[in-house]
Amino acid sequence: MSPALGNFEKALRFGEGRRLKRLQEQAAYIATLEPDFQKLSDEALRGKTVGILGLTFKPMTDDMRDAPSIPLITALHDMGALVRAFDPAGMEQAKMVLPDVTYCDGPYSCVDGADGLVIVTEWEQFCALDSIESSRRWPVLY
Image (cartoon, rainbow, N blue to C red; front, side, top):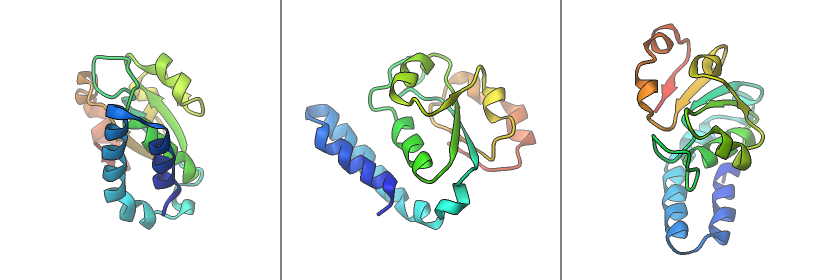
């Protein structure tokens, strides 16, 4: 079991009610990704920089409750990756939940020089970042 999945199980012990159900759904989703995470050795991501666009659980909010970025960033940190992030509205809230992230002042500074990019929350602004798509040297995950 990867450290990422272990973090979900710890989180489940502290949840209750609707939040517990949401965490269980997220844990089940991450479990489906487990084989992909296992293919990546710790060395594959150790020291690599991953840009994260969108931190909140949905666009147009600063709400971090049950945000998919939380377990994702935790898993990336567990694998030794460095994480830079940008969110149009949720960075102040995210800083309280994810203190070990480098927060950027815009999407371009977030991905500049990054080894990978994950678009977590589909903000409208991110759909118009065609220059990122055309100049990238790495995969973009949605």
